[in-house]
Length: 107
Image (cartoon, rainbow, N blue to C red; front, top):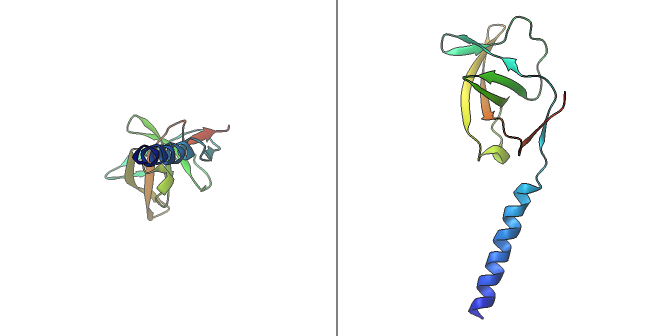
């Protein structure tokens, strides 16, 4: 009986772990933007255009994908909070280190 419980517990753990493997990847639809350091904040290069749902950026020697809100499904990734200044407004971004297991690039 004890062996059965241990076996079932192990099976449940395997199933839960495999769910993360099959999770849907976040689609990135653009080349990375190199952010411009501006005192303690960052800003976009002058050539940058429209706002998107996520931002594929390069700063601090790393590629990151940034959002205006935290993403629970990315909690296992390294995350930095940065401020972006645009048109006189300051936005808090949550930037996760790029990882092929979580993101798919399409450009």
